[in-house]
Amino acid sequence: MLDPNRFRRGLDETAAALARRFFDLDVETIHRLEDSRRDLQTRVETLRNERNVRSRAIGKAKASGGEMQPLLTDVSRLGDELEESERQLGEIRNRLDAMLLEVPNLPHPSVPMGRTEEENVEVRRWGTIPEFEFEVRDHVELGRESMDFELAARLAGSRFVTLFGSIARLHRALAQFMLDLHTREHGYTEVHTPYLVHPRTLVGTGQLPKFDHDLFAVDGHDLRLIPTAEVPLTNVVRERILETDELPVKLVAHTPCFRSEAGSHGRDTRGMLRQHQFDKVELVHVVPPCDSYRALEELTAHAETVLQRLEIPYRVVVLSTGDMGFAAAKTYDLEVWLPGQQRYREISSCSNCEDFQARRLRARCRRSDGRGTEPVHTLNGSGLAVGRTLIAVLENFQEASGRVRVPDALRPFMDGAEFL
Image (cartoon, rainbow, N blue to C red):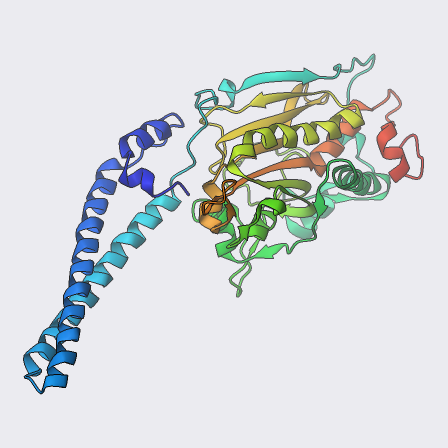
């Protein structure tokens, strides 16, 4: 969440910054609630002081044998008034907190303003788009013998897939390749996390309360299936004060991800592009505030390295203010070239959330000057989405015969096989 002080000092500036991402902050309501909070806070403090004064007077009267009943009556009255004022203050604070949880992060000044992905700005491209001397097949055609959507639909419904044989093995090889690269060369610690988490864990990273409709709940239990490993990985530092020598924290996990895709009806219904369940290798950084934008470039480069090693062409775009995720201050998307669609498609989002998640998580670090603590900055990114990487391999390495060449980087994970 945003620093609450932004709503007490600099509310108009905060509203103007949020307007860049087309979020209409209810300034009038916040002003009214803040005025009430200040008045009640003052009243609570005054009543506490008055009650303490009467309580001390009771002690003196008792010691001197003086009259205590009027003082006892006053203390009782003040206690009742204090209790009611504290109740009202609690309600006001809860209303402000609830509003604050619905407010997205402020965009970094370098983020281009725009409502949709059409306003995203390309930063760079890598690789050469392949040219084929035959009619290009998409991943559904290429995987028709090993990629069964009808079976998955009978088992679980639409937007699922069952993989068999060499394609299932390729899926496993991709995840293992990514994990080995990030742990052995990029300095990440591998983590195996729960796939089910408490709602408060999702509040910590910003998925709740706003995106409850996109999560799968477990009937009879106060648990949700994770939409991304970002959730448990970032919560590793929940309610902790990190020492200087503990930073940066760099974590990686391979997990399934579960999303209802509530807002995507009719989009990408063919194939594996948009599924209710998919695998992802997730990267998370926890860093001091001064390092977070350097860390964003590093994290993005780590995700890019996966595609470079696989020799798959891609481009990097910086998302516009209207296309960014709720918790992000700045996001780079990696978009991979898919010959079957003749277009670039998103395969990774790398975001700096600054202190937005840390304030929800109460995650702090020691200041470099030793003067107290401050919220850490958190970053996350896909390194990469395994299913979409599989699609990219199938479509970019297809041959006229219909077979698919295995990228050199994956062959050690496929017993040296050159083709699927």
